[in-house]
Image 1: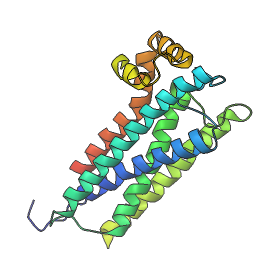
Image 2: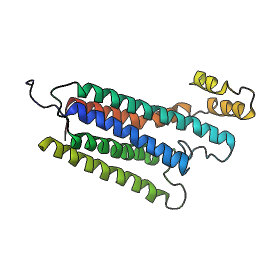
Image 3: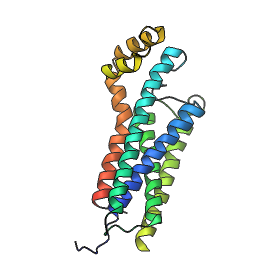
Length: 156
Length: 58
């Protein structure tokens, strides 16, 4: 590899982790706290009294802690990428990587936690499966859009 | 994990909800399964980020 060869990976990885973090925070803030559709293990321990709610809050807190770590790692990678001369600084690459991370967060979290482990569902009750599949599908669409944006950034 | 719980609940050690929560969580046979469930998506995504950093596939 020559010194002038562009290396997109560091900026893509930074945006990807920031997308994972931002997607996780939107999930936690919107679905867990504002709408209160579900909590982290609400399908195993329904939060129907204070004690059960506190147990779910503990697991929600750990979820947010891991989300925070992803965000910090993304900021650290972005800082390192910004100091490298071989990393092209392109908005399409960075925004696309954020969308890719956010979308894959929804897809991976949806497949593992909703479908495989069943610890919670997006909107429990009637139409539960449709909500879960819709969540995964929107994640995949967002990830695809992000991937296309990254490709567009490479070709400019 | 239990030590963290103790620290969290130390602010209200004698509250009935705190005692009940500690008993429920530490007595939960699925404690580590729950931890793995919460952590698993982040491990998968961190692995993908590592691949993207080494070589962009897109």
